[in-house]
Image 1: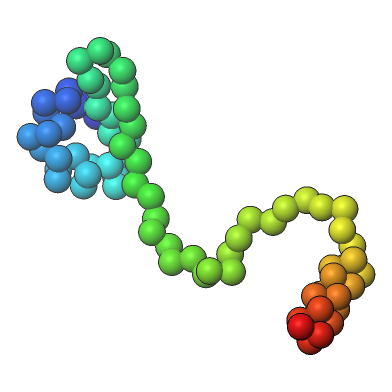
Image 2 (image 1 turned 135 degrees about the horizontal axis):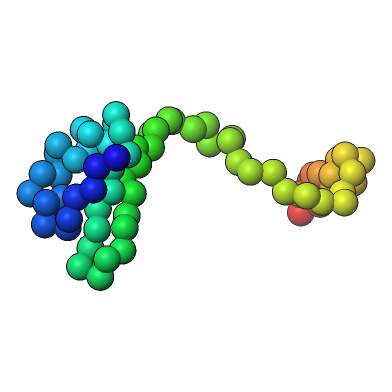
Length: 76
């Protein structure tokens, strides 16, 4: 674990980021708060990778709504 002060982190930012890929790195500010520097993966997500929702609608309900919508669009 490495702890940098705010000023040290500014002066050594590229080294700090490199170290964060191998071990825990923290930065303290002038108020004494401690911040963790954590690498995150930038995986490319599919546009279809959305979080699901809970609903009481059944598959039949959804299919019926689609049929009604399609029918309404055909009569317009």
